[in-house]
Amino acid sequence: MDVVARELTYHYNKGAKFAVLALDDVSLNIAEGEFFGVIGHTGSGKSTFIQHLNALIPVEKGSLIVGSYDLSKRDKKTKKSLPEVRKKVGMVFQYPEYQLFAETVYDDVAFGIKNFYKSADKSIIDQKVRKAIETVGLNYDEIKGKSPFTLSGGQKRRVAIAGVIAVEPEILVLDEPCAGLDPQGKTKLWKLLHDIHKTTAKTVIIVSHDMNDVAEQCSKAAMFDNGKIVAVGTPKELFSNVKLIENAGLEVPVTCYLTDELKELVDIDSDFKTSSFAKAFADAVKNR
Ligand SMILES: Nc1ncnc2c1ncn2[C@@H]1O[C@H](COP(=O)(O)OP(=O)(O)OP(=O)(O)O)[C@@H](O)[C@H]1O
Ligand SMILES: [Mg+2]
Image (cartoon, rainbow, N blue to C red; front, side, top):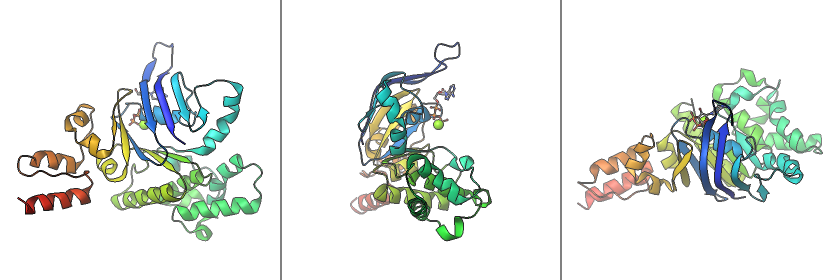
């Protein structure tokens, strides 16, 4: 499923004195298969944009097509298809662990499955819950009967992600999935998200504030600034333009900063991932 947004505009509290223009003429394509980053300063419209993707926020103006669903339409057929859209586009909110609610991990992960696969019998539900819990790297037999509230922060986040991937969405959208995790927790979560990208969700869309992470992890990214998209490209394309990144109120990745600082001395051509930067730097020094 591709995402095609055209001139998408959205106001909070439209018509009221305190109306806020959160999206301003946003046009963006996200092709199936991408591991796509959504970046931008705080309040730039990232969360507003991604919440359009499963129709949590209705299209006010412009158009939005997700796979075969035209979310800009308001007819009965489109309204009827919204549960399908929500099944195909899984949304993991920021700090998803705060949304755990059930008495056991099993019940929490099973909730979405029961909602979206109404005719699934107990054995199918069991199978799907087990698969999702194991996919997020937890031990099903050990954890299924525990209260989610007794788990560590990292485990809770995994359980919350399991609840979303259990429904087997084609597009998985995560708002700041690594917020508040320690470096080891972050590394593990990125690995998990790439595993899910390989096995479950064809497309992964991630909101991130961390440009180093985006350089390291994403195949492509879109940069928001005051509700507008100011750049779209591979990390290499985006981060080659240091001024653009800084003007949008973002920090450039360390590798990008170093490349820029060193350019009078050595020419380093890398995609700004730490490993390729280090190799390109070493090669440039050797060849000098
Ligand atoms: N529920 C709301 N009511 C009114 N205004 C809102 C609401 N949610 C967001 N906004 C405003 O809309 C704009 C875009 O907000 P949004 O949450 O999409 O930004 P963001 O890029 O996700 O920011 P952050 O990085 O802080 O999460 C901001 O000006 C914000 O204040
Ligand atoms: Mg946000």
